Image (tube, rainbow, N blue to C red; front, side, top):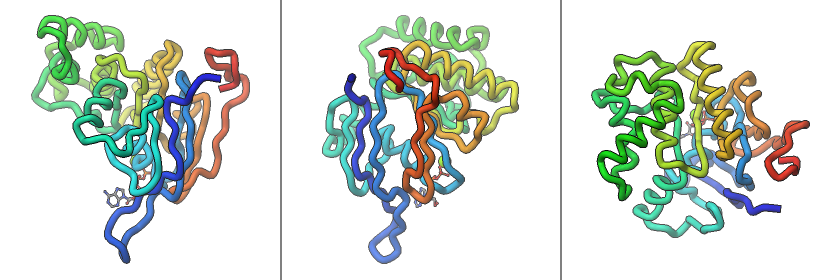
Length: 239
Ligand code: ADP
Ligand code: MG
């Protein structure tokens, strides 16, 4: 059996100080394997985004251990976390989070600023990533000149440009109409088919249909974790 790409144990997260602190994650244990497509579901306020931010190294847990790709990340410096995030993880958010006045091409090239690629190579990679998600004809447009579906494709291209091992998507279709939602989910599914590990946060059943494994959290605890039947992963093992 292969090794988990994510392994967390007894993750707890509280906000606020002592007496007034509220615990949002209440002891989460989870292993995710390379190539999985996991949906994290639960109602609003259940802790989905907090869990995703923890898994994505965007936020530190109050308690608990986390191994990413075999490396214990709990004691790493902010710089090291930023570098791991940049090289191994890609993020897609509900609100796209693109730079408003910057072209699609430059938005996508941005994560490559820290790489050793030349400016020309960065532009070529950004262009290829935009083409791969069907917005190769929108290179020069700023986000305000694009539809929601196009903006989310640009955000996916930005998440992909560093060739990350894991794609995190937090309610990626939350601002989209049905047609664009399907298009965006087909792109995400396609990435998983090509081997990317995908961790998707959603509260919508239709969206979780795309995942192979569904984890439900309630009040900061996992209440169910199910691998769908007839889903066989790349190793021929039930994932
Ligand atoms: P979900 O994504 O499932 O809607 P969140 O993880 O965003 O839930 O939030 C879970 C709970 O944690 C909510 O009650 C929210 O108000 C609280 N929370 C989230 N972020 C913070 C924060 N930075 N400070 C204080 N409370 C927070
Ligand atoms: Mg959320």
